[in-house]
Image (cartoon, rainbow, N blue to C red; front, side, top):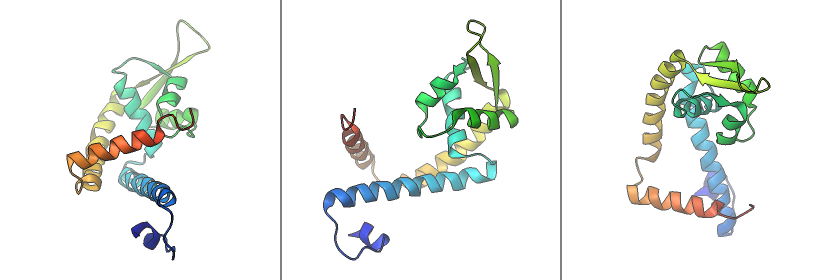
Length: 154
C-alpha cells in the first residue's frame, strides 16, 4: 500500500488503479530527476532527447517529422525545441537540396561535445535510480511495461 501512503489515500485501491497511479507517479519522479540533472546545462529533457536522436543519425540529416516520430514525449513542439538548440549552436538547420520545402536538421560538433558531457551525468543519475533493481528485475519490468502497451489502443 505504499503508493496510497505516498499520495495520502486512506483506503486501499484496486490493483489496476494502484498500478496505473504508481506508473504515473514513478514516471513523473523519473522525469523530475532527469530535469534536475539537466538544469545546470540549461537544457530540457525534450532538448536532450532531440540531441540523442540526432546523434543516433551518425551525421545524417534528419527532418523535423522524423525527430517528432522518435520523441519520447509526442506532445513536444519540435520546431521550438530545434530553434532553441540552434540558438545554443548545438544543431544546424538547412534546406533540403532535393526538396526545397523540407528542412534538414543535423547535430553540430558543439552539440556532440555537450551531449557527451550531459550524457555522462544523465547516465550516472539513471544508474542511481535503478541500482536497487537486479538485471532480472529490470528485464521483468521492461517486459511488463512493453506488455502493458501492446495492442492496447492501436
